[in-house]
Length: 118
Image (tube, rainbow, N blue to C red):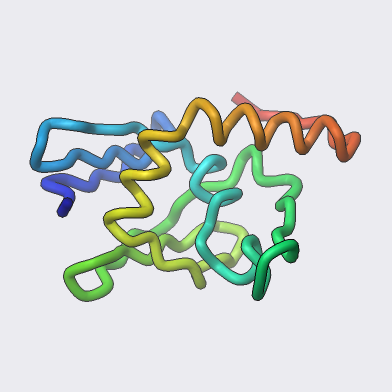
């Protein structure tokens, strides 16, 4: 499914993604950064996943189309190596509540005190 709209909403700190079937999602910058499909976050194989810390206030500074299948997001922390395919963006939208809860639980288990500016 191809997005019909991808809009960076800096003030709200979300990437708005709408699909042709009417589904749409507002994906927070932090959520996208910590779920980057890059090797930095996913590792190079099963069991090598990493928990990015200190991403509460990260900002997306660029959205670059990659062919007809993905976008590359650039963050103000220098990260820009993950390609977010249309299918992955939809998955992130559909699973946002569960993935967000799991991320917060992992931070708590790691003893990380999450601090958000806003």
